[in-house]
Image: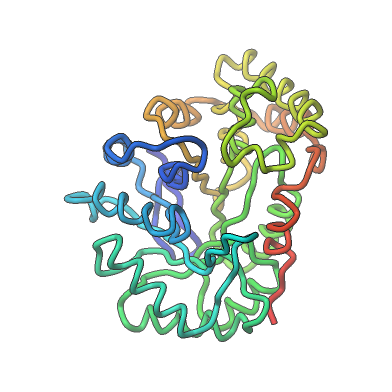
Length: 329
């Protein structure tokens, strides 16, 4: 299993990790026993980076992950996130106050059944709290021995620089795939300059780039709310995926494997965390390591799906206000 270091001083992790959001019924009903089996099989296969969040199932995800890791804790780098708050009437809220940082961490530790979180992310930047205050509280968690490394998710370059000045940021998460990569590329210019690792979530375009979604009738669950899957955008995006499928056939691999191989070829600072509920998909994703891409191949794949070519925003309009461009007070 190829490994990469997160940042200049962070932990070494498998270059492909496991995003755990799907284990909370986001993309279809999830079975707890199957989820536990998937996590354990993933660790057996050499996956060492497991990524959760307190808002995935509003605590359920962390509880399941904690049970799955019984006897395996020392084999993984355990990452989770805080900061999103439940709002049944609309988009999630966000809380980055120092008191909430402490409260959220202690709750995650209890649910996970561990004494320390390896990598603790702020899931969304709070526009009403200076990032220095939030990261200052996260730094105190490190001093208390409750967290080893700090991360940010969907933070703008300016926010990343300000946060890193308070305490070293080990990793930054942003959506990064062939379909959506402009913001990730801009973020990586900052993370590379600061020696911060980059974790690509939704590297398969929320399943679009696997080739499994061929028509609108196959769009369900959380996907249906995402603009990329809506009727006015679907056909254009499906045509982009068809280009990936054609190249994958030439290379003798699946579209998912080609996409992940392309992503990892973007630089040694990149780690991908595709999510799935299925062991077969996890195994398929690991097959990306067997896909050999030349620089010409990488350029050809990039040209097949040009940056900015995807139709539709990355998130529904209400949620877009909380990603990337948010600077913090």
